[in-house]
Length: 236
Image (cartoon, rainbow, N blue to C red; front, side, top):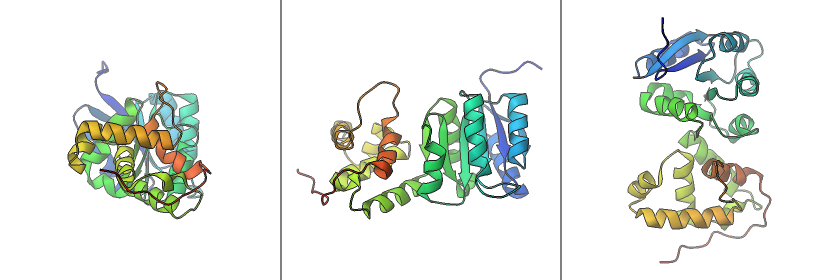
């Protein structure tokens, strides 16, 4: 059979049968996506990836034999062996630590999504398409956990951002465009651009090409040890 280059080929790895089948069916029912294999372990995942060379892998974090971070570990090995394969990690944990583990070697072609989104076809499919194009996606709930965690730290660079800049940063990390953020916050796109420029400057992110600054901004919140000061108010 001739392969359709317009169809995204996906491999699913999840040890829980019902979740695995739910994920497979959700993706198979989406236009332009084909699940070429669904497996239950990280070992099987790596074997089938080498054989099928899919466009995207969707994997659980914890799988046999130890139910620790097998999915994330496999994702790193897959990305090293096949840099063009996108990876979506599904987790039941809205914790920044797991997301940071996934993104420690870069953000391109990686997504961290909560398992509850398997029941939200639009979110899951959007994440798959995003990583297939080399982009990044972090679940909104995880972004909120990251923000809450970093604002509690006195040394967090997040504390130099205004309330409005924080809102925009959260929207960015959810994968929304400037136009979508403007609509959500009832602001103009030019205002979003100004706030974005300001928050990137405060977080020390440069305007280099091919750098995913929006996701890098979230990561900066967890790593930067800049001197803290209280949140400031937005000026009119």
